[in-house]
Image 1 (cartoon, protein in one colour):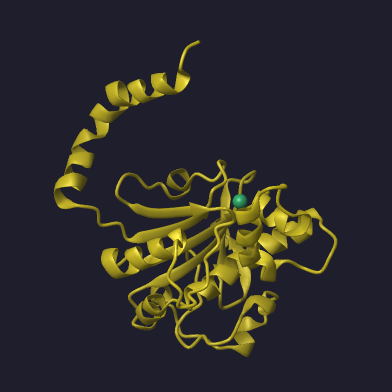
Image 2 (image 1 turned 135 degrees about the vertical axis):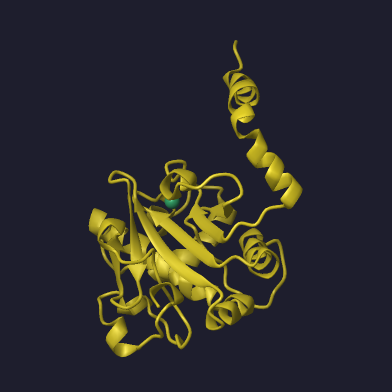
Length: 239
Ligand SMILES: [Zn+2]
């Protein structure tokens, strides 16, 4: 039986790599200097390099079920996503953090339907999205709203990381909330000023917030009233 995966590895080495070898050599000699930490869902249909037109060396990436961010609660443990955030901000000094959820997310659906039997770690992990779930019957509209609310929830949690908050307040770092609609091929970006997700084709920036002067949860303000309730500073990108 042919090993298709082995064939693909050989194809990459023999045919693809020669075309990008110089670029990789430079990244080895000079080290990596990505400016973006991309926190994305593990879903196979979310392909960050395609969406952003980026290549080798440009995205520092961590992916997990739901694109969730654990709270910074002072504990130290086997927290892979938290470790990646610390490394990206403290060592790589990225200037943007993107949290990217997406349509038809199995992790978000599981907030309503539960995890498969035997998935004890997954059941625990899903608690990180629970506050985004709505007290309604599951429906395409409810799932879409929950997917977007979950992104905002993770942005809020990011601001709980001291090194993130410090960099944001010093205007060295911006946070971007994205919801990728698979069937449209379009990212909808969160706009903290209006409290809404806007299709990238109609947006004036690649997603904002929360920013300095933010101190209160914005999750329940996803109806456009956030800007009126909590005036925010002008994000660096829009300045
Ligand atoms: Zn997902």
